[in-house]
Length: 483
Image (tube, rainbow, N blue to C red; front, side, top):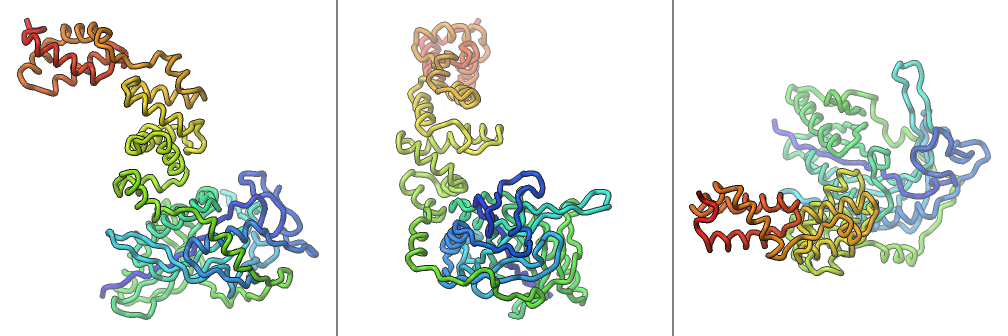
C-alpha cells in the first residue's frame, strides 16, 4: 500500500521587543540566569500583566504579511498546565480569538507555486528554560525567557513532504526577517518549530493518526526528523501495525525520533479567558496604518530586480535572501549604474569577507558609495581585481577610507605602456618555451606570460594592457625569445 504524507507546522517566533509581553523586564539575550524577572513574569500573587503595545503591533504586522484576516476583537486566555518552567502554572495565550486567521505562505516546488495555508497567528508568552545537569542529579530553571513575547504561526496540514516543509520554513523566516520583528536565530531559541505528521493511504481523505515532533534545532533538522518519521510510520503501517498518537523527540546525533509522552489535546489545557486582561478592539485605522508599513517582500523584489537591474532569476533569488544586502545593493546601484558588477562583487568578494569574519553587511564599516567607487576604479583600470580585493579587506579591517588605503599601499594599477615594457621584456626572455608555444598557436600560453608579468609587477600591472603589449611584441618579431 502506498501512503500520502500529511504535515502541519507550528512555528514559534520571539518578537524583537525590548521588554517582555506583559511586564517591563528586559529581553536581552545572554544575561545571567534569573536576573531579568519581576513579580509579573514570576507569577507572584497580586501582580497584574499589562500588554506590550509593540508586541501587539508586530503580531498584527506578521498576520498581514501572511495575508491573514486581522481580527479586530482581541482576547487573551489562560492555557493551564503545571511544569517547572511556568511559574504561574498557566501561560497567557490566545485560544478562540487569535490575532490573525486564514492566511498563506507560497512555496516553489519544481517551478510550480503551491500555497500552504496558515490557519492562525496568535500572540502569547514564552516559558522559562530548564537546564539538566549532565550527571543527572538535578535540573535548574532560568526564568529570564519566561514572559518574552512569542508569536505562534500554525499551518494547515497542506504540506506533503519534508522538502515542502523545508521550503515553507525558509520562506516564512524570510518574510519575518523582512518585517524586522524578530532575528529568527534558532541558536538563541528565537525561532522554534514543532511538526505534526501523519500518513494515510493514497486517495483517502481521512487523516491518519498524528505524531508531534519536537526538539528540532534547524530547518535541516526538521527535514531530517520528518524524513525519518515518514519511513518509520510507513514501516509500521505496511506491517499491519497502528500508530499511537504521541509526542516524539528528535535525536540529532542518532538521527532518529523517540517517544516522549502521549499527546495532549486542547481540552487538557482547560483554556478560559484571562480575567486580568480585558478584551479590546483594534480600530480599522490602526490595522490600515500597520498595513502601510509593510515592506516590499522577496516575491515582489525578484521580478523588479530582473526588470530594473537585468539580473537573472537565479541571481535575484539569491540576493533577496538577505534584506540588508538588498538595501546595500540598491544603495550602490543608485550611484553606479552597473548593477551586474555590483551584484558580482557583493556575492563574491564582499560575501567572502563577511563569511570569513562572521559578520553581516550591517556590521561592516562600509558604505554603498565606497564599494561603488572601488568597483569603478577596477573598471577604469586604476586597480586590478586582486589589488581591489586586498584594498577592501584592509580598509574594512582597519576601518580606513578606500582612497587612503590605495595611497598607503601604492595599489594603483600600472597601465602605461612605457612602465610595463620592462616587465614584459623580462617575462619574454625568462620564458622562451611559452613564447614558442604561443607562436605555435597555443593561445593559453599568453595567459601564462601575462601571469608572469603580474608576478614581476607585484600585481600592479593592468593584465588587459599587458596582454596587448605581449601580442604586439610577438607579432612584430616572431623569433623573439627563441634560441
